[in-house]
Length: 383
Image (cartoon, rainbow, N blue to C red; front, side, top):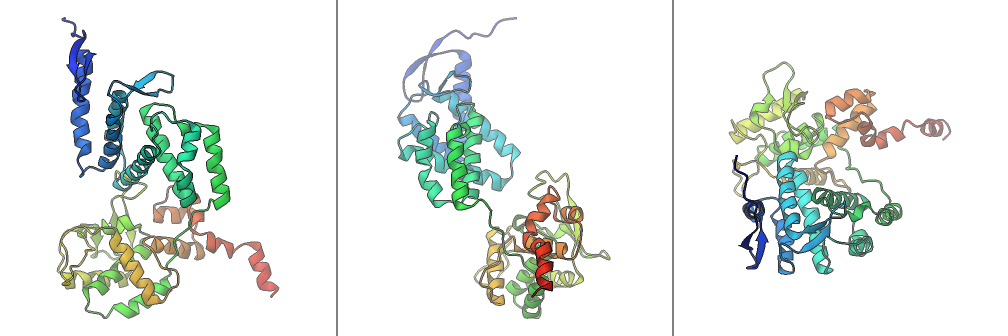
């Protein structure tokens, strides 16, 4: 069997410089170029990150050493780019759309900060990283910084180069930031069934498409404990209005990206009637249940953006006269809190709400649980 020819030949790289490369290295160069072109396309989720990394080509040749691997080997810019695009392909296959957007956003900010501080992002010391992140720490909450640091750490792990996030000094700085600003993540205000009843009384007799659509969204988000992304993904085929108990099929969720644990959840007779009214008024027979409306009041044919739910909850907050607005997560939070207050077990609520663990229920129900603490009962008896 003939052996592959890996002898060095002269190759002119993209910077117009000749290097002695083997046939295998040339093949890798071609693979890198084609994949890189794909990720440069603005329609791809990582285009801004790739463009930021590309800026390094004005300072380094592909063969220049720009980093040190975790085992102490020299790493060229070409090696970094090759590892980067391979990782991006894995991310695109593995993660949900919103996770990809968050990762791209965090890493684009990081690479841009490195450029502004004239630092090589692939060979940065712990003190340089601390200095670079100072403004971010001043502006951002601990939860935001934790996500950002996690994204940056994944980036270094994927490239298999020295990771400043693993340095104890860097870790201590972010621990201090969390202590100084407080680590508790703010929870959305929960919507109550009393508030939903009030909105129902206000909107249910309306002939406005927006009013009835909003009532459908608010009812489902509370009764079915739905996330914003789940709401805008509901299709007509997911709703069973004919069964004795009306059901909604949730095919995918934040914790079930491949749909392997797809489930049915019930909703009320009142919500069944409102959905039927919405379908009659809108003329929708297939596709997505919730839709945006044009400025002329026409129903759009495309999937609504998640921001539609924010607009619906903002309007509901104004109708209710709330000082603190409801959010796209308020129905889910409020529904879980109502179930806790009604005495249902954490495991039952976990299954209904499609949470990973029963412990997550306690996080949603912190306010409700406070009312059951021993001191609460003591204070009631000793007013």
